[in-house]
Amino acid sequence: MSDLPFHDTTDFENADRGFVAALEPAVVQGGDGRVVWDNDAYAFLEADCPDTAHPSLWRQAQLCSRQGLYEVTEGIYQVRGLDLSNMTLVEGDTGVIVIDPLLSAETAAAALALYRRERGNRRVTGLVYTHSHADHFGGSRGVLAEGEEDGVPVLAPVGFLEHAVSENVYAGNAMTRRAVYMYGDRIEKAPDGQLGAGLGMTTSTGTITLIPPTVDITRTGQEETVDGVRIVFQITPGTEAPAEMNFLFPDRRALCLAENATHNMHNILTLRGAVVRDSRIWSHYLDEAIELFGDSMDVAFASHHWPTWGAENVVDFLAVQRDLYAYMHDQTLRLLNAGLTGPEIAEEIELPPALENSWHARGYYGSLSHNVKAIYQRYLGWFDGNPAHLWEHPPVAAATRYVECMGGADEVVGKAAKYAEQGDLRFAATLLNHVVFADGSDRQARSDLAAVYRRLGHGSENGTWRNFYLMGAMELEEGPDTNLLDPANPEVAMALTVEQLVDSIAVRVDGPRSWDKDLVIDLDLTDQRTRHRLTLHHGALTQRATTDASPPRTPAGLTLTLTKPQLLGVFAGRGLDGVRTDGDPAVLDALFSVLAEADTSFPIVTP
Image (cartoon, rainbow, N blue to C red; front, side, top):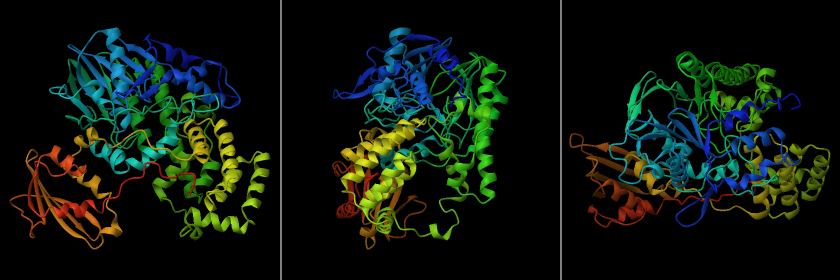
């Protein structure tokens, strides 16, 4: 760390450049008065770095905590510091195009209001989602209220809705629970508490919404004109998101890099969980961006952090990012093919000094350690080839045996204390974790493990690692709390296709409870002009589209004739009012009887 260029203030100059106005106070409330965003809570970052924070992460937090409306270039503005992500506003002939309307409708509305206060009451004439993560579409209703979207194009990369659903609905509960750890919103904002997540400060906790795309971007070189503004697109699937795109505003010489190039090392696999990303193709698309746009832009901005000005600076920035992802990929494969496992590679690999000492390649959000493990996972999966790891006991059973072998809980706690005193916090955490999983009620072990986690968090340069450690400490002492974010609220559900809605029900079926059920339900969607057959058989709920030309061979136990909004109500348990039914409604009750409710506060650091 002593080699890091702390004397270089370029990032601070760029983060402050173009400042127009701040939101004062920087506090956003929901309709019920609950605070869903408070950027003023980070005022403590104006002080020097304390001994409870890594100096490099403290510097990153100081940069990310800047808040307000900023001018990127003529006619292009960003609101930063009102959510984890940025909202960009591009002025057109008659209104303003919104790029990435944050995570929550409440923060998006506050960001748009700040822009309008300074730039006039321009109506929203276009909406662009750069990719399929919720912090880039969740605030859509904050900029386009119900009914206002008529005639307004909503642009997104092809596959956007499919991947937004698979991440935020199918696995949404587990990801959201782990995101509580990753972003640490429950942790007190303080020098010894939460001080950001590297990519931004934290996530807002308002209402997630989704207006479905109306224009698919399907190919690199595709050009669209929105409100008189020309946009040239580069499709980048499999990079930071399965569906993502960069794009150029050629008449303003401004390049949007989505989340493909930010001022930190990004994740190949996020700690909250996601599909493993392809670092090889990520590097390729960054190189392609240099080739496509290197001579056509004077500024590059992204959906997080601050812009980079000057064509040569942007090309250098992209080249470092390109080389970072390529190096991690290629060296992981080199070591993997030499027989090293993921954890072994993570201990062995080093970045070249030119990358190691580049601020925007530092591991504030992703980390070299967990990224190379993700690359290993992408190619070889969870199994490292050692038969001893093929059929191991799950955590509680293994921990019970380990603690017994090591002489009991008191003996293990004592050994952990010695390792902690010697500075080997990693092994102290391992030992104490075994004691906690062997007996979750052991107060001494929980307290000692919380203390070790806090020390690990305070020493971490990675914002999400810090938050995981500090959240683990908090929940060891206080127990888990309920998620504030709802990844599958009715607004998001309304954007799903009928097939996706059924799939979201299918992943809730309790298999063992439904082994002996044999149910068939037909859905006739009058407003969609589609028919669907749902079959619950052998514990699996499957579906297929049907037509008059291909009628089912067997009759359904129940046929529902209804609209999509009515189907949402049925799936939400609001009954069959207004729905035409043919057959036995008890069939629907039988299906609902085997649906499991998600536990929004399942344990992570305790058994």
